[in-house]
View (cartoon, each protein chain N blue to C red):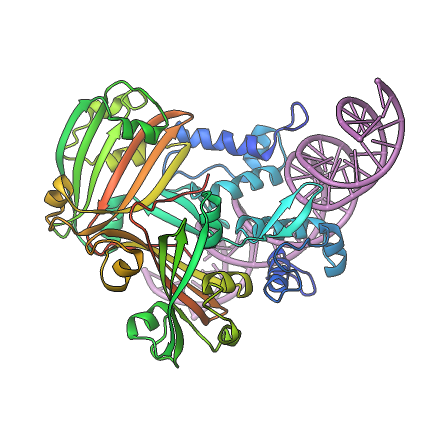
Length: 233
Length: 233
DNA sequence: AAAATTAATATGTAGATACTTATTTTTGTC
DNA sequence: GACAAAAATAAGTATCTACATATTAATTTT
């Protein structure tokens, strides 16, 4: 990895990490100052800093100016999830992708939808329902609201041929996103469009995006039965 | 943030980010070299590097040696989730935490459980079922397998008073974790222990941890109806 | 023409130095 | 003793320099 005898920041990170694992530094403990560690390990402070940055990012330690570095007293499991464009997700599974628009109309979003955006009133938004197919079988049913104020171009898109999911992801980068997961019993539109029995348990992926503090879109994606979402690396 | 006139790495990051937002750099595009950017913006290459590191981490760009930096052609929504100890989660909601052991026995894990660990055969493991309560109401039912090879100490713990969840998180740091989410219909143990009707849709959080490549524990946490998991920041 | 070697290149890393900033601790004053 | 000002501290940031490393591109060899 590096010149012999020289410690890389990953070496330092792993060293500190293993000290946390073996309780040399226990939960809640304060770690030595970066500089002392660099002296002890025989590397530059910048190297310790880089290592600490990584440990901090992964939730193992907490750092504060003057306060020093502490092992998290209440460890958390931190996991990262990548949610790709649905078309790509289907294709990467080796399936043929299909898409079908179910409905599309402009209406005032109901309070629960406004709540997702963190607003209490709203002009009408574009309400789009669509099904994504994998090998001709329903894969995800999405129920989406789009703020035509921040995305007026969407009104010119032919949503019968191009999915709002794809257009938005490619054309409307966001500055903030909220993702949440929960489970629901299939019913109504969801059961009908996914072609499954009422009462099936489904994983819902709910995503809301903003640009600055302006809403862009919020979507409830109902996944087909058996769908699993796995963390990255 | 920084001395006047001087660009901080967050400034640089935001600048590049906004250029991605406004399509100066479009999906798939190659960005200028770090050095050229540093020249253009009037800062050190290290500052651009730090900014790029962050953009890369958040999934906006991809960097490769010699290959340069590219805006991700297929954008993904990247979200981070923190899963705390259940007791702490309950207490932070302002509820009173309770815990009840349901069963605890040593047995050979069935193939699906071995599969979670990525192994094909296994000695007997400790199989623990328990309910976490919030204000005396079932909150999470966990069905857990613990490798007594890597955690022999667990056999001395009185699991009727202390939850395996808590003991493991505090005493058995892991080097790798796999987290996945899916939905199931409540049935059998899950319905009984959560005291809900069969057929309810529940979110399952499945977590498997290793130390090095040795299994530590795998757990299916069945959350009470209505449970939501939200992304961080 | 195909394969192997070599050169060029952009990011990655390590080290040193100097300064900044948030936060705590100490000190001094009322 | 309470409160405010000053000092001390530890991480954070910015810059420079030098070299490492992975990849692509160019060149030579077979």
